[in-house]
Image (cartoon, rainbow, N blue to C red; front, side, top):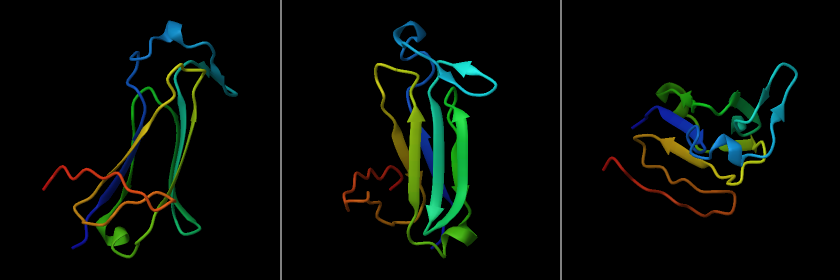
Length: 117
């Protein structure tokens, strides 16, 4: 069975860590923000399939459709947050698919929760 695969990385929702608790800003060429800024990249082997670079004011996802995901066994996910000196730097990576494929980190460890049967 093949299935679409969704990759989501997220940190705390807006204002869960109150803005006054942050002690800095992230500066880029055209803006300053106290939101975390995310670089989220998805690879298969040495080929980058997709990337997102955004202020994590709201979460976004990457999508690999079933016709493409059927030929891929391994994905490499690169996540870099620029925290704007948040006192609680933490994020969660989520992978959704109907396939029953194991998910492991680079050390072979897994932390899976099957939520849809």
